[in-house]
Amino acid sequence: MSIANESFRPKIVAFCCNWCSYAGADLAGSSRLSYPADVKIIRVPCSCRVNPMFILRAFERGADGVILCGCHPGDCHYTTGNYYTRRRMTLLFSMLDFLGVENGRTRVEWVSAAEGVKFSATMNEFVETIRALGPNVRLGDLRCRS
Amino acid sequence: MQELRKRAGELLADGTVARVLAWRAGDLPYNPEPAFFETEAELEHLVYDGFCGANLSKLMIEASKLEGKTLVCLKPCDTYSFNQLVKEHRVDREKAYIIGVGCRGKLDIEKIRRQGIRGIEAVEGAELDGPEELTIRTFSGEKKCAYRDAMLERCHVCKGKEHMAYDELLGESRDTKDAERFAEVEAIERMPAKERFAYFQKELSKCIRCNACRNACPACSCRKCVFDSTKFDSEQKANVDSFEEKMFHIIRAFHVAGRCTDCGECSRVCPQGIPLHLFNRKFIKDINTFYGEYQAGTGSDEKAPLTNYTLEDAEPSVVRERG
Ligand code: SF4
Ligand code: SF4
Ligand code: SF4
Image 1 (cartoon, rainbow over the protein chains, first blue to last red):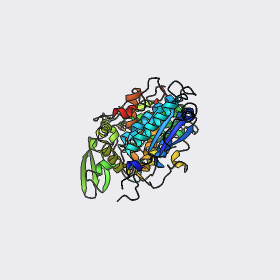
Image 2 (cartoon, rainbow over the protein chains, first blue to last red; image 1 turned 90 degrees about the horizontal axis):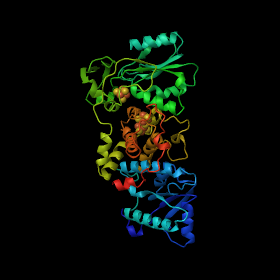
Image 3 (cartoon, each protein chain N blue to C red; image 1 turned 120 degrees about the horizontal axis):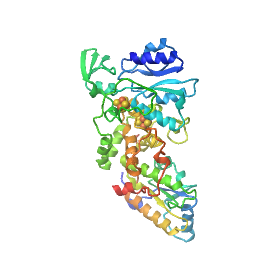
């Protein structure tokens, strides 16, 4: 089965921290900057609230790409949360890569509350990347495996 | 073995310890199992040979809650796990009397079987001071096998024969290291992504989700485990897609990342022979590369890498940039 990329609408999950990135998304909205509706935002109190399991579950439930946004390092509302996020996600992405799952489908971006433009640009670009990668077919259904 | 029984008996008799945690013969000639001994008479069942691979440090969690000290026999690699458990406040150092037992590598019965030796009735020469060759009695006569060729993977990359914690030492060790710890991981890293995917698909599709790897792991000591919960799609059940297949293994390895001492128990206990150490070692290798050399369980009070950070840490995008 092949799905033409033009008709492919990826499912993108974006975890955004309450204090910076979610506010950045809000600013993008109130500034009337657009980003694809394929991006579903999940608000979290801090980027370090994102258990690696959340990312894996998003994929498991059919996401084609997962992006995690938080305050810039040094600007975390809780001072150091995003430093832990940085280590965790580096290791997680590296592991996904090790297992041969394309790591282009996962990303971390730091977006502040003032960066509505960056938020919209990041999301546009990420959706384009995922469109180009196509659906997450590698994570195929086992029940039909011969 | 005789010496160990004698010493354990003395310590029980003089009241230093209330019980002994060691191994006793299992139902087959090559599967001794962890056991507690409370009287000198019981100690005649104590065994210590090449098949005593089981890491007893995790059992000290429960033993720490009991009255009095427990004598525990630890191999050099087990002491790393023990220290890690003490550091995480899961085991009480005061409740343990450690006899650091010598080690000349532990055996993997599957490695013997893979050499075409079947119908095993008894294995001779597995003692600590035994010869360099095992004599295996089978249905079809006697077979020989070099001790080294029957060793567990972990012993070929042994961290060394120095005990990281002990009250006294007993028995001679022999050097077993003859391979590079990260060589296997590096070989996989060099494969193209598709091959890596296929490789892990082949290995992980063997998993029957028995959870033995979790149960044996000394770093997996949470009272409530995500794999027992029905709320996270990670409970024991048949996998639906190849991602679910991987999820369990990624999560298991991630939960112990930075705390895993690379003791090799997970790979040893897996009934399906899945090389689980590859996951843990990949994390260890990445931690060493990105955040500086770190070995869990050496007894230092350094912060674990995932509960620490520096302002200059690599961004997650390095993974992509590294290609
Ligand atoms: S890893 Fe080293 S200390 Fe541990 S069982 Fe093997 S040879 Fe012995
Ligand atoms: S021990 Fe092996 S088969 Fe059992 S759950 Fe772990 S990986 Fe799967
Ligand atoms: S993950 Fe495996 S190697 Fe690491 S501590 Fe647990 S059992 Fe030992």
